[in-house]
Amino acid sequence: MILIAGPCVLESRDNVMRIAESLLPYYEDCTKEFYFKASFDKANRTSVDSFRGPGLDEGLKLLSEVKEQFGYKLLTDIHESYQASPVAEVVDVLQIPAFLCRQTDLLVAAGKTSAIVNIKKGQFLAPTAMEHSVTKVLRTRGFEGKASYENAKKYGVWLTERGSTFGYGNLIVDMRGIKIMRNFAPVIFDATHSVQMPSTGSLTSGGDSSFVPYLSRAAASVGVDGFFFETHFDPSIALSDGANMIELTKLQKLIEQIDAIRAIVE
Image (cartoon, rainbow, N blue to C red; front, side):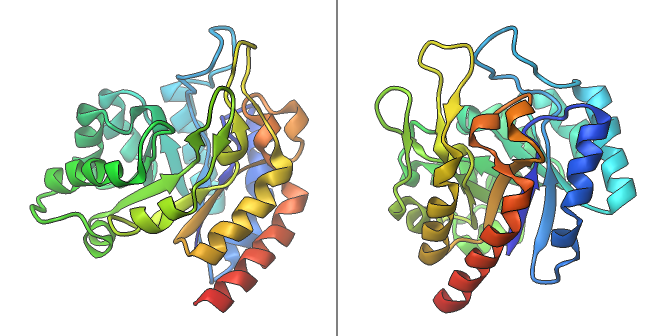
Protein backbone atom coordinates (compact mmCIF):
# COMPACT_ATOMS: atom_id res chain seq x y z
CA MET A 1 0.00 0.00 0.00
CA ILE A 2 1.21 3.46 -0.90
CA LEU A 3 1.14 5.76 2.13
CA ILE A 4 1.71 9.50 1.77
CA ALA A 5 1.89 11.51 4.98
CA GLY A 6 3.36 14.70 6.37
CA PRO A 7 2.49 18.32 7.14
CA CYS A 8 0.58 20.41 4.62
CA VAL A 9 3.38 22.93 4.32
CA LEU A 10 7.01 23.06 5.40
CA GLU A 11 6.94 24.91 8.69
CA SER A 12 9.95 25.46 10.95
CA ARG A 13 12.80 22.98 10.67
CA ASP A 14 12.09 21.72 14.20
CA ASN A 15 8.43 21.05 13.42
CA VAL A 16 9.20 19.31 10.14
CA MET A 17 11.85 17.07 11.68
CA ARG A 18 9.60 16.23 14.63
CA ILE A 19 6.78 15.16 12.31
CA ALA A 20 9.17 13.27 10.03
CA GLU A 21 10.63 11.31 12.94
CA SER A 22 7.14 10.36 14.14
CA LEU A 23 6.40 8.82 10.75
CA LEU A 24 9.42 6.51 10.82
CA PRO A 25 7.38 3.36 11.75
CA TYR A 26 5.49 3.58 8.45
CA TYR A 27 8.72 3.80 6.48
CA GLU A 28 9.99 0.73 8.32
CA ASP A 29 6.76 -1.20 7.66
CA CYS A 30 7.50 -3.57 4.77
CA THR A 31 3.82 -3.60 3.77
CA LYS A 32 3.89 0.14 2.98
CA GLU A 33 5.51 2.19 0.25
CA PHE A 34 5.98 5.35 2.27
CA TYR A 35 6.35 8.92 0.96
CA PHE A 36 6.90 11.99 3.13
CA LYS A 37 4.82 14.92 1.90
CA ALA A 38 5.15 18.64 2.53
CA SER A 39 4.77 21.70 0.30
CA PHE A 40 7.51 24.31 -0.18
CA ASP A 41 4.91 26.79 -1.42
CA LYS A 42 1.13 26.87 -1.00
CA ALA A 43 0.38 29.02 -4.01
CA ASN A 44 -3.41 28.83 -3.77
CA ARG A 45 -4.04 30.01 -0.21
CA THR A 46 -7.31 31.85 0.33
CA SER A 47 -5.73 35.03 1.69
CA VAL A 48 -2.70 36.87 0.40
CA ASP A 49 -1.59 37.15 4.04
CA SER A 50 -1.65 33.38 4.72
CA PHE A 51 1.61 31.49 5.27
CA ARG A 52 2.80 29.95 2.01
CA GLY A 53 6.01 28.18 3.00
CA PRO A 54 9.74 28.77 2.70
CA GLY A 55 9.79 28.87 -1.09
CA LEU A 56 11.56 26.77 -3.69
CA ASP A 57 15.22 27.05 -2.69
CA GLU A 58 14.88 26.82 1.09
CA GLY A 59 12.12 24.25 0.76
CA LEU A 60 14.22 21.90 -1.35
CA LYS A 61 17.08 22.22 1.13
CA LEU A 62 14.79 21.16 3.98
CA LEU A 63 13.27 18.31 1.99
CA SER A 64 16.77 17.13 1.08
CA GLU A 65 17.65 17.12 4.77
CA VAL A 66 14.59 14.98 5.54
CA LYS A 67 15.58 12.51 2.83
CA GLU A 68 19.19 12.37 4.00
CA GLN A 69 18.32 11.91 7.67
CA PHE A 70 15.44 9.43 7.36
CA GLY A 71 15.83 7.88 3.93
CA TYR A 72 12.27 8.75 2.93
CA LYS A 73 10.94 9.02 -0.57
CA LEU A 74 9.49 12.50 -1.01
CA LEU A 75 6.39 14.05 -2.55
CA THR A 76 5.71 17.73 -3.05
CA ASP A 77 3.53 19.83 -5.31
CA ILE A 78 4.53 22.20 -8.07
CA HIS A 79 2.55 25.14 -9.44
CA GLU A 80 4.74 26.44 -12.26
CA SER A 81 6.29 24.60 -15.20
CA TYR A 82 9.78 25.86 -14.41
CA GLN A 83 9.65 24.18 -11.00
CA ALA A 84 9.35 20.64 -12.38
CA SER A 85 12.97 20.02 -13.29
CA PRO A 86 14.74 21.34 -10.15
CA VAL A 87 12.14 19.82 -7.82
CA ALA A 88 12.41 16.42 -9.50
CA GLU A 89 16.12 16.39 -8.68
CA VAL A 90 15.16 16.16 -4.99
CA VAL A 91 11.76 14.50 -4.74
CA ASP A 92 10.40 11.20 -6.04
CA VAL A 93 6.85 12.33 -6.82
CA LEU A 94 5.72 15.60 -8.39
CA GLN A 95 2.18 16.41 -7.36
CA ILE A 96 -0.11 18.43 -9.60
CA PRO A 97 -2.58 20.42 -7.46
CA ALA A 98 -6.29 19.84 -8.04
CA PHE A 99 -6.87 23.36 -9.33
CA LEU A 100 -4.16 22.80 -11.97
CA CYS A 101 -4.97 19.25 -13.05
CA ARG A 102 -5.85 20.34 -16.61
CA GLN A 103 -2.84 22.65 -17.12
CA THR A 104 -1.15 21.08 -20.12
CA ASP A 105 2.18 22.89 -19.82
CA LEU A 106 2.51 21.88 -16.16
CA LEU A 107 1.62 18.24 -16.87
CA VAL A 108 4.05 18.09 -19.78
CA ALA A 109 6.86 19.66 -17.75
CA ALA A 110 6.30 17.12 -14.97
CA GLY A 111 6.13 14.31 -17.51
CA LYS A 112 9.54 15.25 -18.90
CA THR A 113 11.17 14.46 -15.56
CA SER A 114 11.90 11.00 -14.19
CA ALA A 115 9.63 11.51 -11.18
CA ILE A 116 6.27 9.87 -10.64
CA VAL A 117 3.48 12.35 -11.44
CA ASN A 118 0.57 12.40 -9.01
CA ILE A 119 -2.39 14.33 -10.45
CA LYS A 120 -5.06 15.40 -7.98
CA LYS A 121 -8.56 15.37 -9.42
CA GLY A 122 -10.07 18.81 -9.67
CA GLN A 123 -13.00 19.43 -7.33
CA PHE A 124 -14.84 20.66 -10.41
CA LEU A 125 -14.28 17.66 -12.71
CA ALA A 126 -16.01 14.37 -13.32
CA PRO A 127 -13.79 11.33 -12.67
CA THR A 128 -13.95 10.35 -16.34
CA ALA A 129 -12.28 13.64 -17.31
CA MET A 130 -9.06 12.62 -15.56
CA GLU A 131 -8.28 10.20 -18.37
CA HIS A 132 -7.17 13.19 -20.44
CA SER A 133 -4.76 14.44 -17.77
CA VAL A 134 -3.18 10.99 -17.51
CA THR A 135 -2.88 10.82 -21.29
CA LYS A 136 -1.00 14.14 -21.41
CA VAL A 137 1.73 12.71 -19.18
CA LEU A 138 1.79 9.34 -20.94
CA ARG A 139 2.22 11.01 -24.34
CA THR A 140 5.04 13.13 -22.95
CA ARG A 141 6.74 9.94 -21.82
CA GLY A 142 6.47 8.34 -25.24
CA PHE A 143 3.42 6.14 -24.77
CA GLU A 144 0.86 6.59 -27.53
CA GLY A 145 -1.78 4.09 -26.46
CA LYS A 146 -4.91 4.42 -24.37
CA ALA A 147 -4.58 5.39 -20.73
CA SER A 148 -5.06 2.36 -18.50
CA TYR A 149 -4.21 1.28 -14.98
CA GLU A 150 -1.35 -0.91 -16.18
CA ASN A 151 0.14 1.66 -18.54
CA ALA A 152 -0.07 4.50 -16.02
CA LYS A 153 1.56 2.34 -13.36
CA LYS A 154 4.36 1.40 -15.75
CA TYR A 155 5.02 5.01 -16.78
CA GLY A 156 4.67 6.50 -13.30
CA VAL A 157 1.34 8.33 -13.28
CA TRP A 158 -1.09 8.36 -10.34
CA LEU A 159 -4.43 10.01 -9.73
CA THR A 160 -5.69 11.28 -6.37
CA GLU A 161 -9.29 11.59 -5.26
CA ARG A 162 -9.87 14.58 -2.95
CA GLY A 163 -13.60 15.21 -3.07
CA SER A 164 -15.89 17.20 -5.35
CA THR A 165 -17.52 20.58 -4.91
CA PHE A 166 -20.97 20.21 -3.35
CA GLY A 167 -22.55 23.61 -3.17
CA TYR A 168 -20.65 26.43 -1.51
CA GLY A 169 -18.10 25.63 1.16
CA ASN A 170 -18.38 21.86 1.14
CA LEU A 171 -17.01 18.77 -0.59
CA ILE A 172 -18.43 15.31 -1.04
CA VAL A 173 -16.71 12.06 -2.01
CA ASP A 174 -18.44 9.91 -4.60
CA MET A 175 -16.83 6.53 -4.07
CA ARG A 176 -17.81 5.51 -7.60
CA GLY A 177 -15.16 7.95 -8.81
CA ILE A 178 -12.39 5.86 -7.30
CA LYS A 179 -13.47 2.82 -9.30
CA ILE A 180 -13.88 4.91 -12.47
CA MET A 181 -10.43 6.53 -12.19
CA ARG A 182 -8.73 3.19 -11.54
CA ASN A 183 -9.54 2.38 -15.16
CA PHE A 184 -6.96 5.05 -16.10
CA ALA A 185 -4.32 4.93 -13.34
CA PRO A 186 -3.50 3.85 -9.79
CA VAL A 187 -5.60 5.92 -7.39
CA ILE A 188 -4.64 7.49 -4.07
CA PHE A 189 -7.36 8.57 -1.65
CA ASP A 190 -6.63 11.94 -0.05
CA ALA A 191 -8.63 11.53 3.14
CA THR A 192 -7.76 14.84 4.77
CA HIS A 193 -8.44 17.21 1.85
CA SER A 194 -11.71 15.38 1.24
CA VAL A 195 -13.06 16.75 4.52
CA GLN A 196 -11.96 20.28 3.76
CA MET A 197 -14.53 23.08 3.71
CA PRO A 198 -13.21 25.55 1.15
CA SER A 199 -13.36 29.20 2.11
CA THR A 200 -16.71 30.88 1.63
CA GLY A 201 -15.57 34.35 2.61
CA SER A 202 -13.33 33.86 5.63
CA LEU A 203 -9.55 34.13 5.42
CA THR A 204 -8.95 30.38 5.63
CA SER A 205 -10.58 27.16 4.54
CA GLY A 206 -12.23 25.07 7.23
CA GLY A 207 -12.62 21.34 7.62
CA ASP A 208 -13.88 18.56 9.85
CA SER A 209 -11.21 15.97 10.55
CA SER A 210 -13.68 13.79 12.50
CA PHE A 211 -14.85 12.39 9.16
CA VAL A 212 -11.37 11.29 8.04
CA PRO A 213 -11.62 7.77 9.54
CA TYR A 214 -15.05 7.13 8.04
CA LEU A 215 -14.08 8.16 4.52
CA SER A 216 -10.78 6.30 4.77
CA ARG A 217 -12.47 3.06 5.76
CA ALA A 218 -15.01 3.50 2.97
CA ALA A 219 -12.26 4.06 0.38
CA ALA A 220 -10.40 0.98 1.62
CA SER A 221 -13.53 -1.08 1.11
CA VAL A 222 -13.92 0.20 -2.47
CA GLY A 223 -10.29 -0.53 -3.24
CA VAL A 224 -7.50 2.02 -3.70
CA ASP A 225 -3.76 1.87 -4.24
CA GLY A 226 -2.85 4.16 -1.40
CA PHE A 227 -3.79 6.86 1.08
CA PHE A 228 -2.76 10.47 1.59
CA PHE A 229 -2.93 11.99 5.07
CA GLU A 230 -1.79 15.44 6.08
CA THR A 231 -0.73 15.07 9.68
CA HIS A 232 0.76 17.08 12.53
CA PHE A 233 1.62 16.62 16.19
CA ASP A 234 -0.78 19.51 16.95
CA PRO A 235 -3.14 20.40 14.08
CA SER A 236 -4.41 23.41 16.03
CA ILE A 237 -1.08 25.20 15.47
CA ALA A 238 -0.48 23.97 11.90
CA LEU A 239 0.21 26.82 9.50
CA SER A 240 -2.05 25.39 6.77
CA ASP A 241 -5.04 23.02 6.67
CA GLY A 242 -5.03 22.31 10.39
CA ALA A 243 -8.80 21.86 10.50
CA ASN A 244 -8.75 18.79 8.28
CA MET A 245 -5.46 17.24 9.44
CA ILE A 246 -5.30 14.04 11.43
CA GLU A 247 -3.23 14.12 14.60
CA LEU A 248 -0.14 11.94 14.53
CA THR A 249 -1.22 9.99 17.61
CA LYS A 250 -4.45 8.95 15.85
CA LEU A 251 -2.87 7.80 12.63
CA GLN A 252 -1.67 4.36 13.70
CA LYS A 253 -5.12 3.08 14.72
CA LEU A 254 -6.60 4.27 11.45
CA ILE A 255 -3.85 2.60 9.41
CA GLU A 256 -4.52 -0.67 11.25
CA GLN A 257 -8.21 -0.43 10.38
CA ILE A 258 -7.41 0.29 6.74
CA ASP A 259 -5.04 -2.68 6.61
CA ALA A 260 -7.74 -4.97 8.03
CA ILE A 261 -10.32 -3.83 5.49
CA ARG A 262 -7.87 -4.14 2.61
CA ALA A 263 -7.07 -7.71 3.68
CA ILE A 264 -10.77 -8.61 3.46
CA VAL A 265 -11.28 -6.88 0.10
CA GLU A 266 -8.20 -8.43 -1.49
